[in-house]
Length: 146
Image 1: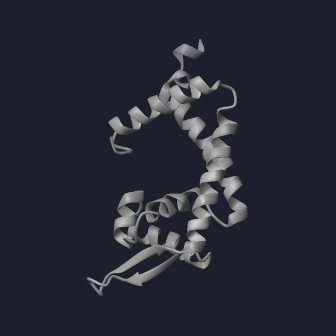
Image 2: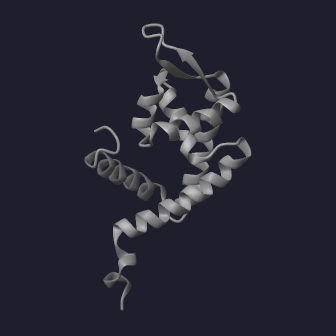
Image 3: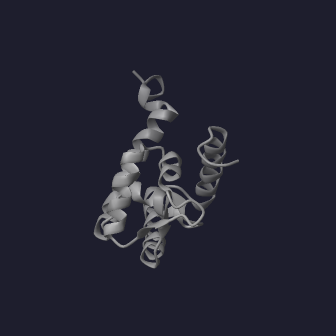
């Protein structure tokens, strides 16, 4: 059987396996900071403004209880804090602390290092083309805004 005629030649399979590898390497880079890849989405979402826990859960694509666990972990690191919403005292907002902002910057640097390692086998023009194509696919599937 040729590679072209097998599952391992499909784009979905290759992207999935590369994603697993990239995520594992990224997790290794994050570990000294006390973070996991799942925390990075929360740090990124909070970079703009405070958000409600339920809003974060929906944006990350996890249950409310999972986001609570993630926030507890980030709170122990001093990266986030829970504050009462001034317009609705029943609701808590989550905001990034200065420590959280610093961790976010560090995670971006580590993610870029991860990209460099992952993409080292192709030249800069191919990297740019790959980013553009993946961006279009992500937008078309609703993964990111168009």
